[in-house]
Image 1 (tube, rainbow, N blue to C red):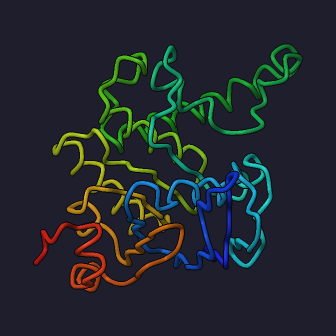
Image 2: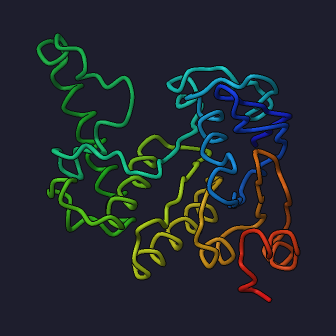
Image 3: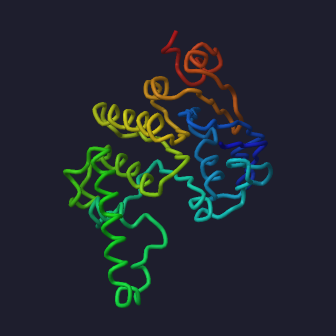
Length: 253
């Protein structure tokens, strides 16, 4: 589904991503791990159009997307989350979801006068969809709560819910487990598995929690100094001496 080929990106004299090449297969949950500064988030920014690569190509379903602006990549059904959640703090959870879909009829002010029924019908459809998604991520009881009042873990679930409003084919999650307690972590992992197996959504996940990565992701890609260091199943990654020494601290020995 996603092909990253010989991507390079520098910021001044710092080589953030250097000759990085890997693929993400459709229908899989792929993990992306590595130490801070390995280039993982920069790679996400390149895939989703926040940065333009200096060299190399990025293909989505065989079509080049490198250099496209974020809104055009979003329209190709590629969605992402961020390390620090970006909820609309002073809007309710329901409102946070309902603003996501593009080209809503009610966005044009004259439609509220001349196409009032179309506006109402679409709003009801979007509301029903948002409620269904909030039910899925088990936040339905907070639908009328302001997003700023959520816990860190609940905000991560809201971020996932927001991506689902866009009917994505590929979701890039940047540290979904960061700051999440174990109970919500399990819920988040279960949701991701269900979305992959039941709805066919493909995931690429940056994560530092190795328990979450090893239980959820297959394959796992390891980055170091802007390059791909290793790739394999969780078991293969656990037994890779370079990975054990550099990233996992020997906990799987």
